[in-house]
Amino acid sequence: MNSQTLEEEFSDIHTLGSSAGFDLDFVKLSKGTHSVPVRFRQGVRLVAFDLELKSAYHQRGMAPEGTIALGIPRQGTQRFCGARYGNNEILPFNLASGFDVISEPGFQANVLVVCPKFLVEVAAENRFESLRVLETARPGDVISDGEANRKLRMCAQQFLYGHSSHPAEDAEAEIALLLLEASQERRTVESHG
Image (tube, rainbow, N blue to C red; front, top):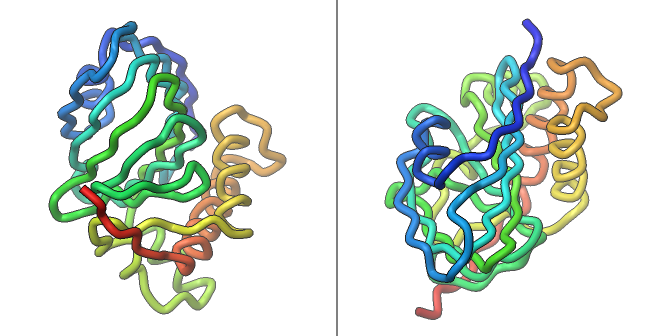
């Protein structure tokens, strides 16, 4: 089965969220357009988004049930679950209480939504002991900047924009492996109100 890539301008973030299976509650914090340009690639075992928010938002929500979802910010981030974090960190969205992000105007990010069964298969093939880091994230957990994180960011962009030298299924396996490697570099940032 081949992957499918779409580009769409959503009239608002709630329409995007419902079409992607996310339960979202975004509150606009600044003037600007409500529209959200998105590039979306549906793979065989994962989905990737590239999005930009023109206005500042308080982003709250839940990842699609039965998935592992992560935010990969590139620009315009401020806070994640009450803590400051950098644009080079990866944000796990599978929190029991949901994710809570405050973003600046011009926020840009990729989002990965992965089937847990696929990650279990890749983990077993590559001798990773557990997905616990991804499945049971706590508020403030982030995946730190590191070699696997940087490679994952690059691979996600290549997957989204069709620049991968691998067939789609191989690119998905590479993304999953890099995600598992990057998740070993988790850290917790403290909330400061």
